[in-house]
Image (cartoon, rainbow, N blue to C red; front, side, top):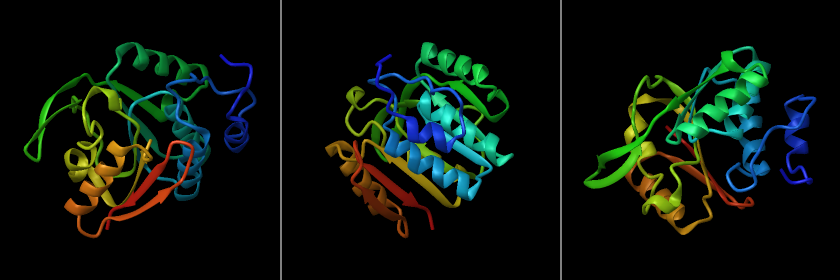
Length: 202
């Protein structure tokens, strides 16, 4: 772990005494996590789903704990990462507020294209917040595109979708496709460290 801790503002927002466990190359940037955390603390969603686990899981689970309601379901394709996140949840006393599902990537057809995407199991209904930070972009073109078409029937009206790394060309194209295929979908882009696109379902 680097001697420079980049999540001090987030730690204060979440009222945590000790620094959050993070990894330099895999954890989401603080600006993205602050945005999602502030939204969840204000709106107090009952059901949150995220694609990829890690620091974001801890942040969202802590929001649910502070709210006194809500639960996070995290889809994780790496078994080692899934177990590490579970252990961090346990260490922070957040087990009751999140579940990490080991969801290996498997071939799935989405709108006539083939993607390797998370195995879907025990999917929550009426999801009010969807955070998309996986699968990793290097695995395939438009790696995160399947999230909206495959999960659309599980999302509540007015669901907020947060797409990380939205400054990349792949994510820009995903944004274009989502807006084209979902009439009424609201979108705004935030010029964050890695770029962030926020969508709101009608």
